[in-house]
View (cartoon, one colour):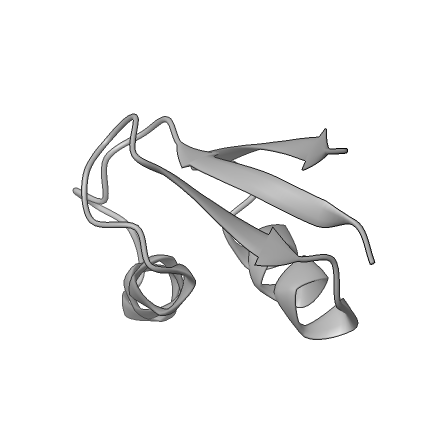
Length: 60
């Protein structure tokens, strides 16, 4: 299964509470921090919620 590299590129100041919770659920805590997750529909949904705060890359 493919993996996704998710990098936080913007801070959470002024973000809605559900967006803050989603970022923490993805395992991100700081700007420019990256995590890898399996490419599942649940993860894709979380990425869609915070798309303006993160960058996503596919990892081979």
